[in-house]
Length: 565
Image (cartoon, rainbow, N blue to C red; front, top):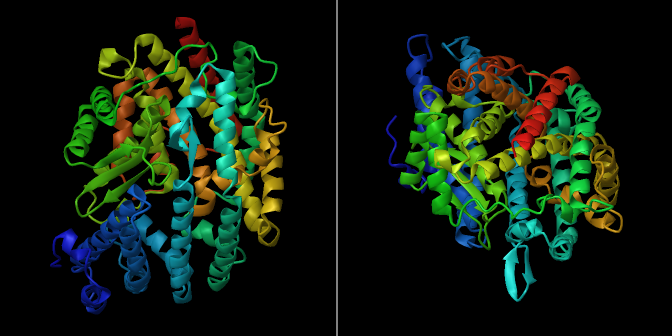
């Protein structure tokens, strides 16, 4: 298939793309021709994927760029629906042929599920859903506060929450929270639109509810909503007591009678906040040194990203919130986006998103884009494992960010936050199950507030929110996944459990654990989810026993690091 440079392709209207799909539709598909046919289809898919990714990136690096927004929306409206219809035809053609190309068992399984789900009338609705998700990013990305005669983004206020001055922390926290609460009106209106739209999409696809639609859309073949509830219960049984112990220790060390929300980021021993880097160039250089120690090839991958300007790291006004890694499959490269402000969380985000980037690099040898469609439950193992695999090399002795004492402190902080994350994940996931089990009730933001508040009290102990109930119960509005990526959150909890198992192996033999990790990443999406975990040296699990092993190890290492000072 003869396609131009990606930059030229990005300007093509559908009329120039369509003939390439027509060729594939008309082709005679046989055992002899299927390999070349798949290669051509894959190449076309790579061009469309990279176009989408690059146009989306442009809207996130500057949410005020109306031209970028318009280009992205035009692509969503005029290209994506047509490409989805054409891809649907090709999936049906391949499945109907009965051919089973090598390494294509899982992609074929996914295609059958996608064929079952496809409805042409949903294409404009799915486009509208993406546009509404972009509107959420625009609203949140525009949130700024005036403090001490200077304008800050909400993200830029985070370092002040590490101040040892408790009154200052409270002032900063309240100012930020008040600004976020001002958007409850527009976010409520946006939420009602999204909920209505998602119900229509599910009904059009013949599904009993949106959760059933989304489960199939996400390709969740290896676990059920009931398994998620069991996971929540296991977290409540195993992790919540450990998290409560971590927070109670923090309260005692701070010497306060009640732990308040503005007490969660400050160092409990009144040490100077960790300031790992002065600018993003230092963040890049030290991250690369760490990856070289984890594995020289991973370090080389990261060096390529630095050299080719595939990192947009610093926070600035008008930039979308959060962090992500996307792929440019024509260029065979990943791209990392984040909002660094000079705190240790930025280091963790860098390690995390780099794990995703390494996944892109490692899986590029697979010949077809369909084989590189990795289930998110394992994609997050790639990222979360990297946070842990890199943790022994945070000190300056390895070219990293910290003194040995600071590195130990950073590792403790990471492990404690990981423990605290599981209960928060359970809140987010359980909330979304409730929403789509009770969509009519959930259309009322006040009902959402009530359910979120109840789940928060169930899973998030110790911290005192008295007098701050409005901020607590509206927390669902500040979780972008709920608006932009429904049901995409339990993956993090599952992957963290897998990542701790990979790390446990690394504590015994780092080189062997990293080799298994890279081998699993190279498999892309060619085997089942349990098989991917097994290749990485882990077990795909949601039970209390596996969770308890992970929590016990994390608590033991925290105690060991604290003893070492």
